[in-house]
Amino acid sequence: MKKNIAIVMGGFSSESEISLKSGSVVMEHLNGDHFQTHKVVIAQNEWTYIDNDGKLFAIDKNDFSVLLPSGKLTFDAVFNAIHGAPGENGQLQSYFDLVGMPYTGCSSYASALTFNKRDCIAALKPFDIPAATSYYLNQGDTIDVTAILDTVGLPCFVKANCSGSSFGVTKVYKSSDMTAAIEVAFKEGSEVLIESFLDGIEVSVGVIRYQDEVLVLPATEIVSENDFFDYEAKYLGKSEEITPARLTPLQLTNLNTLAKKVYESLQMEGFSRSEFIFVGDIPHFIEINTIPGLTNESLLPQQAKIAGISLKKLFEDMAKQAIIKK
Image (cartoon, rainbow, N blue to C red; front, side):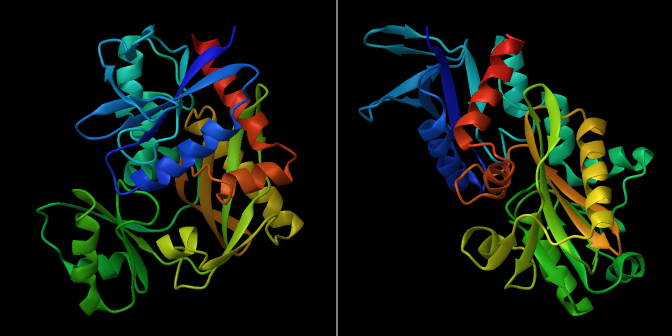
């Protein structure tokens, strides 16, 4: 009998439209021989099951089920395709833990930790993971531009601390632009991370648990047409994405070792994608995405393809991992 898999998509953040695209790709490719996929869109005010005819039914949050004309539909597992809140910050995972629903990806704790860029970097420091110099701000703090620049220098990056897809990110060249950049970041959340600029090759590398092994995928080198790998570069074709990345053997060895170390140190499960910038031969950790983009054009699927893993195989393995938890 086929297992019922709820593909959850949407979410509360600026990434909701991207999530809907990722979820649609999962719906398309998840193996129909073993699974019956079901579309569930989670929004701020309603959780909706959408059947094959486009009819809408409310999700019963008491047990994450749906009452259909044919009877009550329950799910064997959830495939989480929500980027940002609540699917990538631990909130949705905590809910599923409470109702006993297995899901793809890492735990609620690991999700919350990695979604908070500042906390994630701090958690990795004991493991000797190189990173940029950083400065933190919370909503309401006094903005001391001199203190910020004494710490991180110019140019630097001002980032929303809990956001993805480069929303709320500004590259700052002049001290006079700092306050405006901080205001942009605060529009995405109450915490800001300011980091020193690292001048080197930028790469993105997927690390997944696939067929019971931690596998580092071929890295992608990012060559942005814009000033950095911003939203346009990621989603509107304003970058060249070279897979595998043009790295020396030493750089590749260092990257693979460090990427796997980050994955295991943070107790990741399922898929992830980490960003690094090289300073010489040493990759410096920028951030990790626990629900990376899953469209055909996204980096993780590109890397999996180079590694000989189709989307069908990748998604099937992730769903099986979730069911094993149950």
